[in-house]
Image (tube, rainbow, N blue to C red; front, top):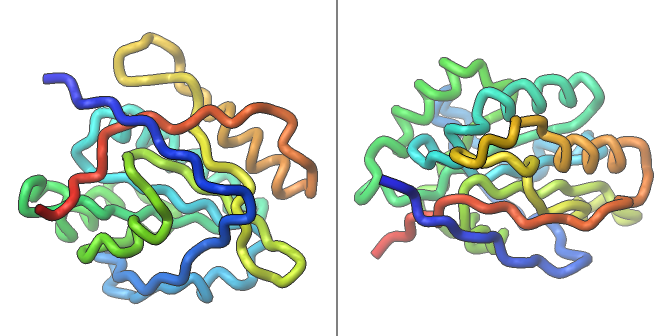
Length: 191
């Protein structure tokens, strides 16, 4: 069965990272936006366990975030899917996934789905890269795809688009290319 493809919606320039308070199932720790105050940039990823678009990238997401963590990038992943319709996206399975893939970032659970709504997230995977602005708040720098690969398009996974954006934000450079929207499975909203 093929997953339904959904394209991310555009978020306006100047969009600031919304406040959040979410649990990390692996450790039980509660994380907030303020926990990343010391970082020059923050990558927020909306992912889940079951989506073929995420499964296609998950090892490369783990590699990319681990590499950039050493360069100062903070990263988090958030799962907002309803576990009524997709039980495998629940907290206990998220903890297993984070441990198995050795995620170097917190994988957070948004049970109420309020955080996904605040970010205007609609699909998995969906990537938001924020930089610190003059007021020391996280302002959206990049909202786009990981790369051109997909579960069935035979394009190799490179992380090119996202890694180029991260390089630019960490080096204080402007983004010199058009941001292609993320494509993936829709977030499974509560009914």
